[in-house]
Amino acid sequence: MRAGPLDGVVVLDATQALAGPFSAMVLGDIGADVLKIEHPQGDGVRAWGPPFMHDSGPTFVGYSRNKRSVAIDLHTEEGRSHFLQLVAHADVVVENFRPGTMARFGVGYEQCRAVKPDIIFCSISGYGQTGPMAHRAAMDLMIQAVSGMMDLTGEPEGRPVKAAAPISDLMGGFCASFSILAALHARSKDGQGRQIDVSMLDAMITMLGQAITAYTIGGTPPERQGNAHPLMAPYEAFRTSTREFVISLTTQKRWDQLCSLPPFAHMVGREEFLTQKQRNANRVALCAEIQAIFLTRTADEWMEDFIRLGLPAAPVNSVPEILEEPQVIQRGSLLEVEYPEGSGNRVKVPGMPWRDVAPDRPVRSPPMIGQHTEEVFRQFGIK
Image (cartoon, rainbow, N blue to C red; front, side):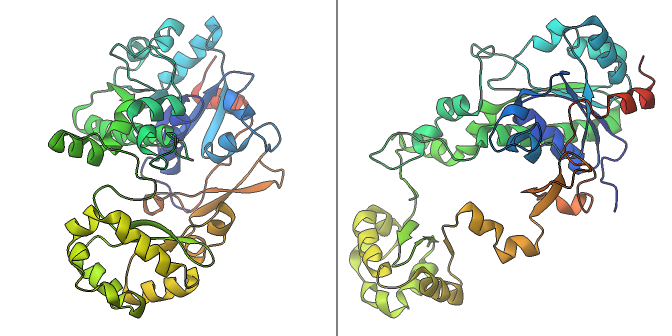
């Protein structure tokens, strides 16, 4: 096993729920020594379930590898003292409390900088540390809603729908990890620490680049398109005689390739479908005609044709199906962790897309509450 590029970097993970823990886990995956600072009763996310493994649900088990758990109660003077003693040995602090909470505990950026001048202090919050919404309570659902993402998700005549995955949390966590890496790189040159303010709302705004830009150019508010795309057609899900699959034909070359298949040959030269612009303008008629053709064969048969022609297409998989997908298995996209450590209870978790700069497998399985408190205190001489 090889060490990751952050080998030797110590991260204090004073986070809970998902955005912060995910960000710290990414740093741990690429070699950092991540110390999860949690209340002696445990991070509340451990109770998110069912199902449960021992005392923790799937959110904790899935996003807490490569960390050591240190039980510290920041509500107490002793806990704050222990935290600041650890800061003196740390490179990074990550926290995702409501803005101002860490300062009220006496362990905010200024207090941490007093004991470690070059500390990198990253705060993740729903709306950021500044602005009229900064102190509002926020979780993934709120950010998906207020960002506009939820309004654009769902069927055209249906209600707004959140994404099935916590995309605000995960995007916010990725942005925090990226910012911390940039700050570590800058510190290696100038020796300076810094405070980082990551807003989950800012992260979601970034994801809406196409919709926002289209609106500011054309002045027409974007609308829900379901599985379709507002800028191109055909680009959506279709039913076959067996199951649904998705296709994406975004260039003239790909449209011509589709029309090379005998069932679509009659669409060649049709005035209303000649160009991408015309196909998009006539998407309702286009997709209705295509849908009728797709219903005549199975998804596997259509996929065989699309793969042969090099056209983008994919089946709509369920979670059990994607776990058995040979591509996922061959690339090692799933990892196994053990919880509690030494119990033999193993579970598959999402792997590391950053695998080429990470150790070959998780160095540590998710920790039990306070599992490493004594070990860490001895290591850093905490009294």
